[in-house]
Amino acid sequence: MKPLDVSALIASAQQSTGLADFGDPPLHPALDKLVESLNSEARLNDMGYQAMAFRINSLLVNRLKLTALLKRRPELATAPIGTPIFVIGLPRSGTTKTQRMIAADKRLNHMKSWETMYPVPLSDSPDDQQQRLARCQGLLDAWSSNPDMATVHEFDAMLAEEDVIVMAHSFLQEMLITDLRVPTYIEWLQTQDRLPMWRQLAVFLRALADAHGKTGDPWVSKGTYHGTQLNIIHHAIPNAKLVYCHRDPVDNLG
Image (cartoon, rainbow, N blue to C red):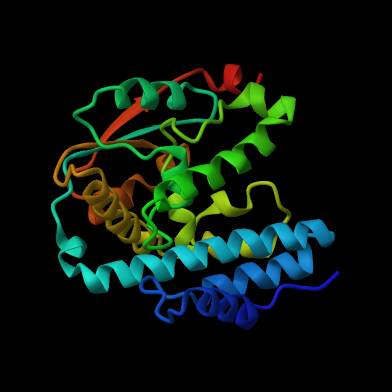
């Protein structure tokens, strides 16, 4: 089993795109801490290493592409964000259903599953969007082939999905390692300022709204992690509104 190497991961993403600038927030030390913990604690087999290398590479490529987009379109960095509505609550409390019901309102922006994985164009090809959508659907089909996963969450590239998947690009979000044993990385994360992660999310929202042709229109998104960071949300996105889904925690765990 070959351990992950931060320098090699960065070089691979840069070589495949011809780009060098990953933008903000800085990759280090977050990526270093993640890789160190994956190598020393996660007990990955060969397939596990390959899966994490693929996941990290995808995030790095997206960051390179986002930074390049902002250099071409600097106005996107400060474009208005219509009032974002964040659906929050414990897992299994109805957050997904609530978000998808609200997202049915065509006046609102929302992230589809394929956009959370591939939020910015990967090429100038006229069918780039379809390529990103197909890549996402392929991954979702693989996940939903597990009957346990399929009963917990409905997977479809065109359905509204939670923004914590996009927030993984900061390497400051637990979503990236929910199914892995990386205690040192998690302990480190708990001491870190998450404001840069939220500021990066705001940039992704602006870029996606522009792609939707709906700059300045309201957003609806969700994240079961957001309840632990309510003190940060309004610093990064001052006009954000919250919808809280409540369910008895005993029922949630049962």
